[in-house]
Length: 125
Image 1: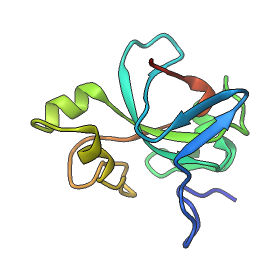
Image 2 (image 1 turned 180 degrees about the horizontal axis):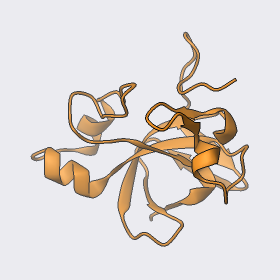
Image 3 (image 1 turned 120 degrees about the vertical axis):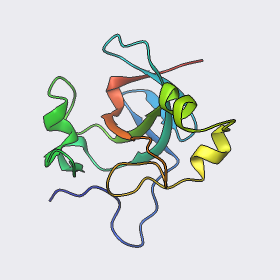
């Protein structure tokens, strides 16, 4: 069964862990594939990547990231550059108050949120 968000009545966890790596909502991460872009974690899901659907591509997070474990939990991130481009004087708290909509946008902004398997992101200290 493919789902994009927790079932009705379920809460998204604030942290996810797999393979000794833990990431929380509000953490800064980078793409483990070498992209140096800084990203903010805005949601965490205990849903395995092979069950987490991406509405825009009609595929799963695992299908979009074949080099990573299909049973990884999923994190949604927004790029730092996008936050700076679309939001004036933003704060992490302000960003985290905005819900990610079904179309993948952060609240009423034009900022896209992206879903990654946990093992694809690396926390920034």
